[in-house]
Amino acid sequence: MRMVDLIQKKRDGFSLTKKEIDFIVGGFTGGAIPDYQMSAFLMAVYFQGMDMQENTYLTMAMVNSGDIMDLSGIQGIKVDKHSTGGVGDKTSLIVGPLAAAAGVPVAKISGRGLGHTGGTIDKLESIEGFHVELSREEFVEQVNRYKIAIVSQTGNLTPADKKLYALRDVTATVNSIPLIASSIMSKKIASGADAIVLDVKVGSGAFMKTLPDARKLAKTMVQISKGLNKKTIAIITDMCQPLGYEVGNANEVKEAIEVLNGRGEAGLVKVCLTVAAHMTVAGGIYADFKRAYNALAEMLSGGEAMYKFEQFIRAQGGRAAVVNNPDLLPQAQNNMEVKSDAAGYVQSIAADAVGTAAMLLGAGRKIKDEQIDNAAGISLKRKVGDEVRPGDVLAVLHSNRTINPQISQMLSQSFVIGPRRPEEVPVVYDVIE
Ligand code: URA
Image (tube, rainbow, N blue to C red; front, side, top):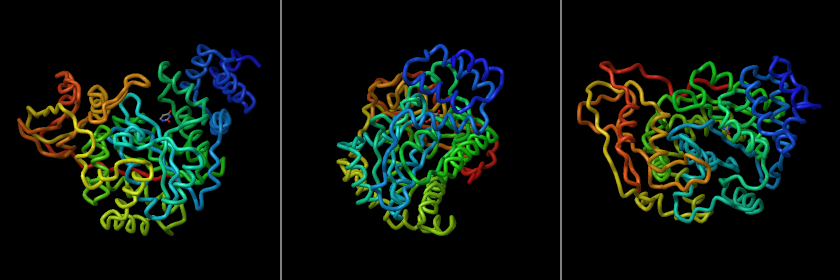
């Protein structure tokens, strides 16, 4: 088999066989297929797409490129949750403890942020002492004991995805539905859960900018999992503005604590309850979504979810006192207000620009392995639909670096203000089972 023939076959719109896809993924992961040929192949997939069968072969080839987590030592139906990535997306910090408080074993492997989107592991590391690495035995024991553990990816899970993602990032091939679907599903399948709830984001801060594209990605992932006998549900949620009010690592932990104390912003609470409710139904705890949603809402207001969050932080070595005193989280030395110079109503907030501004303040990485500032971030003071007058504070920037006025300008430009209150858009668009 020759890679050049397979590139040509895909370029001309033909479907590849399992043997051919295994050859490509194995050859690239092992180093026999060079980056320039793989780049050409990725671009061919970008333009020609893949059928369901090819997409499933690609997913499994990526799963089989490394180890598969053995979570058989964990009692109960293990349910994982994955977001396709957004700005201010702290849902894992909330739905993890919430689903665990209801009795679902949450054995979660999370990532770090890159570019304008954040990552759960960076957020957890803003809690002093929190360990994001556990041995497999510790991980299994903690989930059996407390129903929740969240760790960073270690070892040799899906090395093909790691290598492919880095290449996609520099060849303008990230935004491809079959490539995103295989990337996400391969990691979820390799991390060993019995059921998966996907939070597919749509809007300016997401990879999928339109609802039809988000639906297509959601359906593709659900169908891949169906072919592999893994129960998967995809929920399409809004990312036309940052989720909640806080963006940045310590900031987002602070807001998660607010939600777990029953005081969260309505849209964020709705997304979290929807995701967690589907997790508990998939985990066999509740018979139906409505019952699950209502019971979980009571766990938020009753403090059970917060108690679980505190237990989880302590179990992984973190300073659990932060739940009662969020001021113990890292605080930035420099804080700059961004004010409105217009009157009207907020029409939109470009989530990708807010994410990029937060990254430039130090909350994220421009390049892999860059040191981040846990205290850096943005507190939004106005959201879409709110009224503003000239001089009102739209947002506060936080950083331990000197704040470049260009970042303030970028933030100010991310707000579109118009004369009439915009129509409300849903925070949850659709659920695909
Ligand atoms: N998240 C992933 O894990 N992979 C992608 O390709 C896109 C988002």
